[in-house]
Length: 227
Ligand SMILES: Nc1ncnc2c1ncn2[C@@H]1O[C@H](COP(=O)(O)OP(=O)(O)OP(=O)(O)O)[C@@H](O)[C@H]1O
Image 1 (tube, helix red, strand yellow):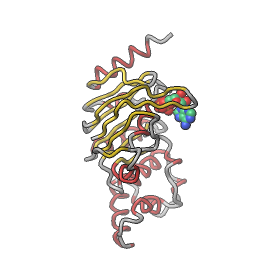
Image 2 (cartoon, helix red, strand yellow):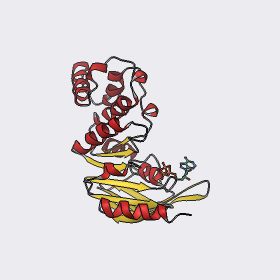
Image 3 (spheres, rainbow, N blue to C red):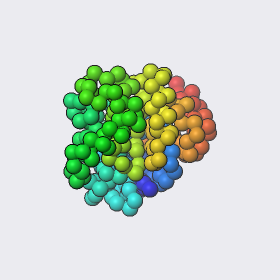
């Protein structure tokens, strides 16, 4: 469970998170809001990528300010642009890098890598250069490389933004089927169908917190009311 307690954060003196408090316990949580409303910054506080100026973020009671290594293992993060996340030359190497240092031998590592590549439709691309994959395949690789580390929570920052409609569907279905808690930031509002809870952000605050339909309707009204 993740708890945000009076989280405030500013960039260059401009407040982008303004006294945000929330307890994130549901399995499927969406986070929506206009560009620049603070979603990514909030998401980045959840695994210590951003440490708030004041307030605190607790992951199963551990403070992101103090225990970032443990928290990074528990909370995986997937970025919208997979190119920024793929770091190794080949597909298999990129997945394997996440397993480094966990005591597995080469064979065990290869077995795990192969299993996760099969699960995410990438087995045929095992030894291909990662940068030659299609946009959708790259996003699946980024997802696979995080999931192989078995995080308890997966934070996905607009993982479908750069994808065509078919790949939006594939990534959405993959996220839907995961065991772990998923916190999904998205502008693709229909990917939130069936979610337990959706938070709407505006100007650094959570301005609505409820079931998807009501949250989306609140967001649409909010945007509609803008000059
Ligand atoms: N590293 C940074 N340095 C300075 N300003 C930043 C930084 N990251 C974000 N910002 C600013 O903080 C504000 C909130 O940005 P953030 O990315 O959290 O919003 P967002 O809701 O995720 O937006 P989008 O939907 O466009 O991704 C924006 O005005 C952005 O320009």
